[in-house]
Amino acid sequence: MAVSASSHTSFTPPPPGDKFGQPAALWQLVHSEFWERFAYYGMRALLAIYVADAFFSLLPDNEAKAQAALTYGAYTALIYATGIFGGFIADRYIGYRRAIVIGGLLMAAGLFLLLVKDLQWFLLGLSLIVVGNGLFKPNISTMVGRLYAPDDVRRDSGFTWFYMGINAGGAIAPAICGWLVGARFGYQWGFFTAGLGMLLGLVVFQWRIARLGDIGKAPDGGNGAARVLVVVLGALVAVPLVYLLLNQKTLVGYLLIGLFLVLTVYFIASGIRSGDKVQLHRYIAMLLLFLAKILFWGMFEQAGSSLNFFAKDHVDSPFDFTLFQSANPTFIILMAPVFAWLWPKLEARGINPSIPRKFGIAVILVAIGFSVLVGSIGGQTGTEVRIAWEILALAYLINTMGELCLSPIGLSMVSKLAAMRDTGLAMGAWFLCTAIGNFVAGAVAAVASGGGASGTAGIEQYAAIYTQIAIAGFVFGAAFMLFAPLVNKLMHGVK
Image (tube, rainbow, N blue to C red; front, side, top):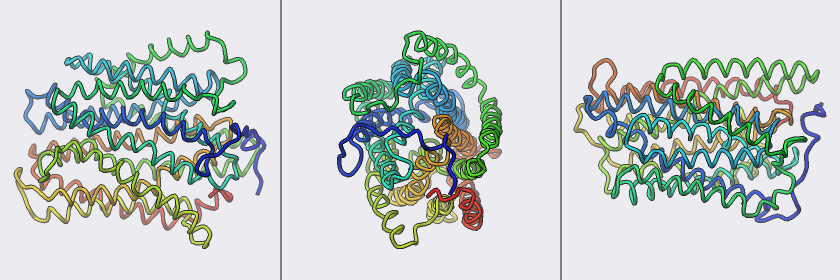
């Protein structure tokens, strides 16, 4: 197997010392990301509901939900899209550590601004979070990849532990920010609590920075304060641009598609310029798997929007509906160890599904999850129909199984398929796929919860949209399973 020198020979190991079979530095990054995810999931659990009630309450209920779903979709799309720029800046300019600190401070400031009950200030707060997240999110994931040599068999399990650990923050966030604080004192105080969590994450990141050794330090010539100042000023300039996009939501979709096309051209051109046919093939495989990620997330990310409204209006539950936002990360915590154990066991027996097949399985599982909801609704109609909470919990469980087949595996896949010089940018592109999926999910949720052309959002409207999601999942999931050997061949031995 030919591997280009630029791709994988620049590995610098972290300081010696393992914990639980993984590099000790992994657990520091897990704890930092734990609090960042606490902040994100805490505000995400409240966002669509709060926007509908606080800023669109004068509109008819269905239209208010539709507008909130579109705002949610545009925000969650942009929050992942900016990772492209954050990854590039860290790769080439200031290093991963400084990017993470700057990004975290911007996110905390944005979360605190959400206290102001005015739509324009609220959108400004969201804009700060978007820009800050772009500097934080892809770079901490990239640093996890840098802990492992390219042939280190612990890499996939390490990313799965990372994925499980950070979801612990996501599991407790809705309970604290939503049920414990937001429902009692006002949802804006839930946003404030999320901001405190973000600051704590930065403290944890800096606390034992020596564990990382040279990992994440600035590239040559990037240690001066001038570069930090340039990045901070650039981030502040980007805030009004994001604010404009949040006010003009349809532009977000065009921007995301344009960025994806530009990145496609960049990676193909980079593979050609390298003169390494293997690297070119790996970039083609990576781009094909990116398409699966977009489809998956467009289906899966109904969770914070239409499924949140669905839980509020159509699910009988003994607890507050916002706690359903804890279901996905809680199931990840419970099941990630099983998946982390399962993949090596299957590999030892020679039956571990290839990465492309795991992606196909993920899409099919989400289709099954939505089929469960559709089946429970049956032929019922009306706005007052309610289903048992266990049905929605089961759908979240099946969807989470799909996520565990794709997201942690995908993070590891990007770090292995991308050339070393492009790993931050490639990780940003991975999150761009999440962004596109989130934007699509927001548009779908606006129809599901807003009633579409009919203007009514009885349970039958949810059933109709969720049926279409399930059909798309089964069709495209089967296609990925069928063409998996071709994609696997392009990966040239990467597992």
